[in-house]
Amino acid sequence: MPPQPPHDTGPQPATDGSADQDSRLTGDAEPVDDSGHQNVNSERAAQAEAAAAAELKRSAAERASASPFGPLSVPVFRMLWGTWIVANTCMWMNDVATAWLMTTLTSSPVMVALVQTASTAPVFLLGLPSGALADILDRRKYFMITQFWVAGVAMVLCAVILSGGMSASLLLALTFANGIGLAMRWPVFAAIVPELVSRQQLPSALALNGVAMNASRIIGPLVAGAIIASAGSAWVFVLNAALSLVAGFTIMRWRRVHPANPLGRERLASAMRVGVTFVRESPAMRAVLWRISIFFFHATALLALLPLVARDLESGGAGTFTLLLASMGAGAICSAMFLPRLRQLMTLDELVRYGTAAQAVATAVIAVAPNVYVAVPAMILAGPPGSRPPIR
Figure 1 (cartoon, rainbow, N blue to C red):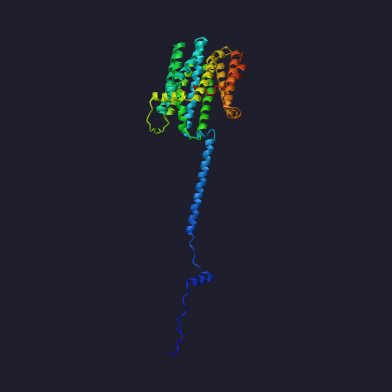
Figure 2: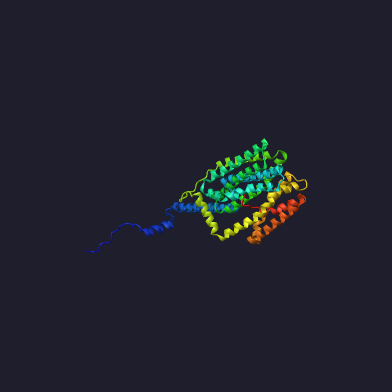
């Protein structure tokens, strides 16, 4: 049989490769879906933007922490810091009024000096238990009660003065009672500050605490002196009571978050025993306490006898006493501004030695000063060594 011709099967379908090649040649390629790539790019851009925003927020927080006024951005700290200024201003107003009032009741230097003793003795007697109570009790209520205590004593002082029943011995007793409130209040705020700010802001917060204390040393005496000269000592205690009540009610607004204590509440005797043991076992702490005790043993004589010094100066009076105390506060604030620089130039021991020498020179000049033109510079010089007294 003769061979058959091949069957005509018609055009054969192109393979996938040839179809793709034809599509590329004719430009009829199917469109590629890029929506997935766009979503990925959008997510990456959003992540980068969020990271940049977080970095800006972190750097802003670091700048705020490094700022000397950074803690004032915390509302609770700002509120209690203002309360602390008011409380310390009241304290200095009370000191000025009681010291000057004693000079009108007696001319005995011993009795005038005992006003300072009555004011600071509670700190010596109650310093340890008050510090322990600040760690045991609710600090908000504790701080508030001390303000109401000071207000109550101020009201009693005002009532006794207006009734004409004030005597030197009664004034010492009421001054001691006021000192109890100050002694119980002092450790509380020092313990509260670390609760209010972050660890990075703590140095700035402590510095602002010192600013509040030293600013009150200027404001308090000036206000008290003006009131004594215009209206009398009784109205100083009226204002003291009013401001102390305002401070107490302001503290009531603080909604303190109580930190959990897994060990429970410590007993007073146990807390005091821990503190005594720590000091006894720490030679460095004992050395510091001895230096503080020796320094203030002689440094407080200046404040104790300053009312008599002011009265005996040429044209001396309540205004002179106020001016001398305000000058001392101004010297303390000026020294605080230069203290970081001085710490770079000198060691701590050198600062203590030079500060003690400055205090001795100032005391000697005040003792022989004939007028305020000599006394005021000496009080400014006396301000830096006593700018952070442990009793305030």
